[in-house]
Image (cartoon, rainbow, N blue to C red):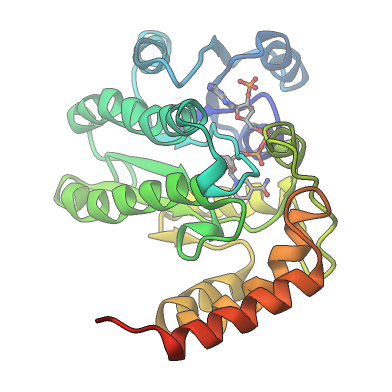
Length: 290
Ligand SMILES: NC(=O)c1ccc[n+]([C@@H]2O[C@H](COP(=O)([O-])OP(=O)(O)OC[C@H]3O[C@@H](n4cnc5c(N)ncnc54)[C@H](OP(=O)(O)O)[C@@H]3O)[C@@H](O)[C@H]2O)c1
């Protein structure tokens, strides 16, 4: 099996490469940090393809696909994993930050898929599938969390594309799988905090944290046996679904979380959060529309 992994230099992508290589897959590993990719390839025996690429550039995405086809002749699974977060209130995210994150997380995903699908369509069916597109979205795709609103929007966009493509490509025997990790121990938190416009996140005591290896193993299963969605923390699937049915109740939980995530710089203290919640309740009953 030939698998492309974008964002293979760290975190979930790196862990998935280790798992897939151990299972016997042939890999194309893409990211911007070439030294990391080459170190990983050496660790895995040296037979994989390393591609230096910035997925925010359309031509780099096309190169990832073209070089994989040139070297291995087919793509069984494309894993669109490269991405990052910004910890910042929506209204304070600059136009440039907003365009950049969509360029990487959304357009980078779409550009890789657009280049890969025509090749998959020409491939013969193997074990029931011509190919598979796997998008690493997030649990926040179904319910955004405070201070990660813009990031959540990019993950929701990936989910929407996955849901539509799953039906569009089903007759062609191309599987589409979206992956929805919760908090995972990777470089993601540090990268998000470095783009925080001054907010300092505190540790969120209630939060479940998974290892990148745990997430990668669930993804490995869904590559071996394609399914629509992978939720490494199963309870998040139901909790985020409830958010759609009971937005007000989930808002209340989020108001508590707002303080934990925002920390001390800029997000205010607990008293302010509580009084704002009270103000909002009063506002709801007292607003006049005439
Ligand atoms: N960790 C979490 O809690 C969590 C939760 C839900 C979803 N996710 C999603 O999981 C995916 C992987 O994140 P992670 O947690 O493994 O974070 P990570 O440890 O920071 O790894 C991110 C990977 O993406 C690559 N990348 C970032 N921007 C890129 C670009 N413009 N071009 C090419 N590669 C790029 C990085 O490589 P280079 O810097 O070398 O380019 C790195 O390999 C992301 O899409 C993220 O949204 C993470």
